[in-house]
Length: 253
Image (tube, rainbow, N blue to C red):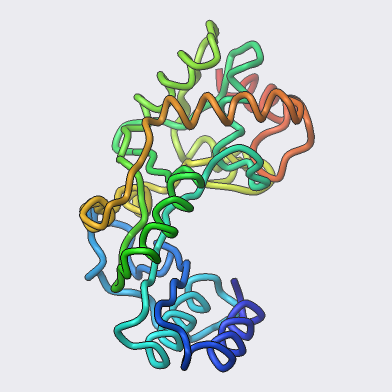
């Protein structure tokens, strides 16, 4: 949500805020100013909204506009990475799809890294419950923290992959124009070590507010079925194409 997203929040507030008994704004954990504090909770510092074309700035601006109008009637839900069947971003589905094909597979080094996601069905269920119970305040809607090595093991188990995972150091990947996190020529879920805590936020408030995070195995199973239905080798918004991956592997091995 950039500047255009914020302009959608203000008209909604103008039309409905005065009469609303309860209001939920879905924000993001990307609002936080630092991503080097594993386990940080909702009290962590957020960015200052200087440039509303930037995602985090626009989200903070939307949070503040909503708080100004709604006060104690507002729930700010800050999800982490939202995943599940039908996700068009490919930031999560890339991995079960890729490990459904033969190896070797290029992966980042996993030491000191984790994966923390929220299944879209769990997020939707909690938002509905929060409305019914009148939950307010600020809550990081995040799932359990899973070490990245364990995440890859779960994907291997889900897909039956029997090839090799080739771990490559960050500087080598960057030299070969492999990108962090998302987008073309990326390794999804891979973050610089300086930002690793983006996927390591406290889930205590979410659990205390009745949030449920299903086992990652269940999410992986649903995503894998969806990836197979949509086509394992379809064009993607994130990840490495087969030719690009093979070229990098040939160069680094």
